[in-house]
Length: 274
Image 1 (cartoon, one colour):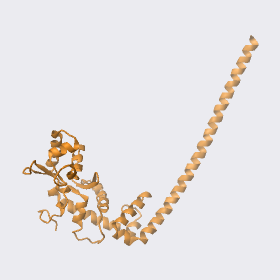
Image 2 (cartoon, one colour):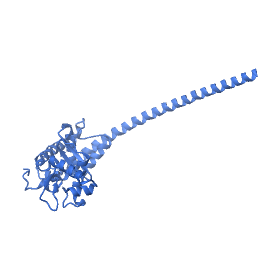
Image 3 (cartoon, helix red, strand yellow):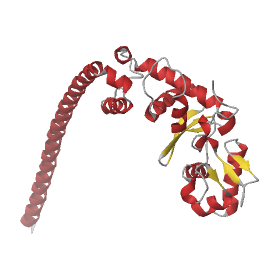
Image 4 (cartoon, helix red, strand yellow):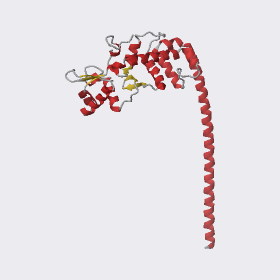
């Protein structure tokens, strides 16, 4: 019995030693794998930085060779901005200065931002500080620019986004397929945003024209009780973003003139720009 006890003790000790050795071996293998993985990550990162650097140089060369197209073709300019974004280059804020010197885009977007702000401020009496980007573009096309490049909605959105740092309330808001410029320091609630989004496609909900809504139209389209639709519309009315036509028939209409096609460019408006 004594001998058997010793054998059992030796067996347990041997298994324990084998188990500890196995753990050490596994730890060594894991350490080796981690080291190899870190080396591979470092190598891949270095290679990626090198490739991005080469691509940035190629992109700058491309910009210089296609300066005319970038300045004069809105679609080409938008594609160029997309190419820049893929490698983390923003020609409008690049510290390298060579981008602005090569393209003149800095001056172009600076003047575009100034002119857009003018349009927003001078039409604010009509729209309360909410203006469809495409309507703004039409208005800008009537103004004289130092630069004669064609202006796209994408250009306007880029210019406005650069104004965020001024904290004056200027921003671009997506309303479904439409984009609007917000030029007042006002945050819209979810309900207000949904009403504005509906206003951009009001005719599809039964309204006589896009940009005009009634309480029943909002309630039906958004599946809300009428008091909720009424509250959202009244808040936008109080913010002077909507106008109320109480004489409209069969029901009063809330007009969002910043979203009505042609309203911003109407020559009969008292807010007509010079």
